[in-house]
Amino acid sequence: MGLFDFLRPRQQKDEAVADNTWLVVGLGNPGAQYAGNRHNVGQMVADELASRIGATFKSHKTPSRVAEGFLRPGGPKLVIAKPNSYMNTSGGPVAALVKFYSVPVERLIVIHDELDIPFDTVRLKQAGGHGGHNGIRDVSKATDGGAFTRVRVGIGRPPGRQDAADFVLKDFSSTERAALPNLLSDAADAVEAVASEGIVAAQQRFHSPA
Image 1: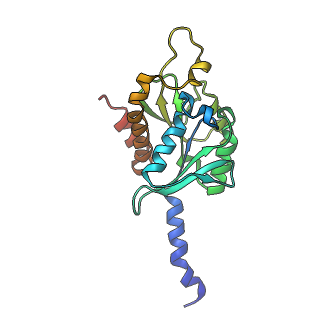
Image 2: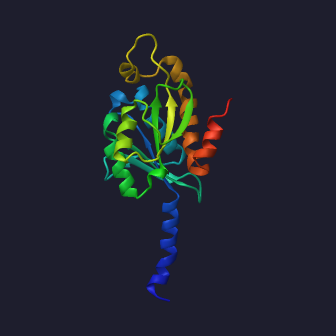
Image 3: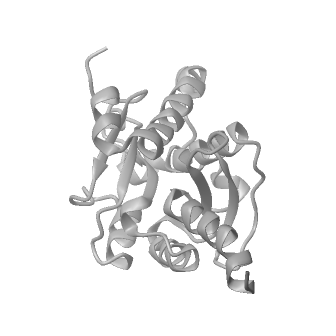
């Protein structure tokens, strides 16, 4: 038996792992001053996912912080990332992560805030327009309009005449903060469902009437 034969089982194992790897990116702005903003809910969900799989975010060769782990033994591997860039320039870090991990865009999941969905609601979407969300606009441009999956975390519309740009850069209200753990948990569940069951099954689960 030659050296190639000894190496083959490890190679096959690595290929199998790569085929079941999902890149999960939580969008937001870097820095403690933005951490609790509505615009950073994607990164809050990323933190929830990392906690579930017992992973810690670390500096990475790409301009992001990354945590890696498996959903369960033999299950999908999640590469969870939080870009170091500001929301509106998220595309560069995401494209760098896609290239570094050789993950097809179809196995990219982007988590972000969504004004057009009521607070405490999660919706899933694959491909499609950016809906005015500048972070998604930049990711779509950087991935050539690829069919990545979006976990849209509803934050609702601003009250009265408050400007949307100001609204997303404010922390959640005290009432919203009380419900926030459940929202983050639901969004993390949605990511896990996409990785484990696929987008169609996950949509059927999360889009069904309560």
